[in-house]
Image (cartoon, rainbow, N blue to C red; front, side):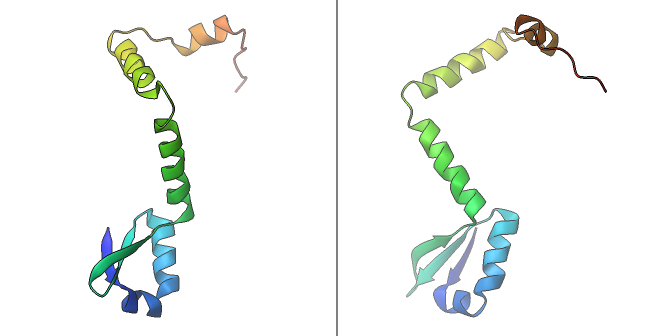
Length: 93
């Protein structure tokens, strides 16, 4: 994450917007030497919002922990088992 004064950002805003969109990086913008805002691309913002939504759902931490335990203990299903259980045919290549 880069830190830039607002005066520097003003002169090259298009360049910095392109950079955060392409790299999914963030730029902390300072005003009078103090952090004032963060510039991020829309894709990164939406990803953060979706993550926050899912993390705020009741029981999600327990569900993730249970899933991780299942994987560790080998309680998983292969593609063939899932296709058979849900009667999903294989695609032709």
